[in-house]
Length: 142
Image (cartoon, rainbow, N blue to C red):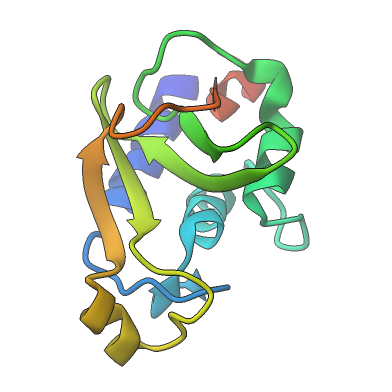
């Protein structure tokens, strides 16, 4: 069951490639990093609609499932410290993440996202050093 739910979530996440980055966005018309990850997790019942969708809030929910080994479906967190998480992405295989990135608090519409080349995109897992990796799918029965 867990692997089927993981695959469903990853297929759903991949469908958002190219969606514009939008600060605070949590819908298919515009997504920021935590809005994107939250949307994917909600699609398979891992998060409720009313839960904290900040990168830190998502980390806090799944911190007990920390792992040293990145794999498809794991969440990767970046920032200065675990109290100052600034970015979250989802692993799509053992070497790549899918993220809503390239924007910032001034990226609030498609035009600005286009100017900044900010959208949901694939990047190497280690393009910068992660703070933590958690596997939210471990919360499902195997």
